[in-house]
Length: 152
Picture 1 (cartoon, rainbow, N blue to C red):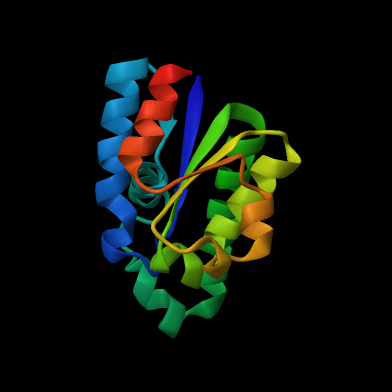
Picture 2: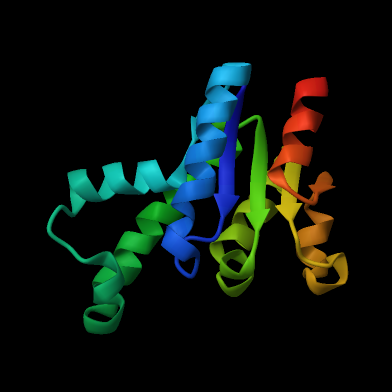
């Protein structure tokens, strides 16, 4: 099984590295699942394709290059969800709510029939209906999600 870890990056605390790292280790060790971690994949992408670029800075200084890079990242993520992932785990927090990528990833997963497991402390009425419509199951924290995955 392969899982895609969806959630805020651009506006998230530490680009969402901590929760993804913890879930990746748990999924690999406990379930032997392969994990697509956008933080790791982005680091690899930038090291290979744009090693000397401050990605966040060029949004202010070179919007054309920024858009070009983001288009590549969108392609990578969409292909991963559509062609390689069996399910998606999404952490919905302030960073995800402010950005756009998470919403797009959940839409891709829904369109291609991939289950989406949403983890959030938000009140459900504060989450956009579109996001809720893309979600298969909702969990109040990662421990609840882990218990669900253990039972599956």
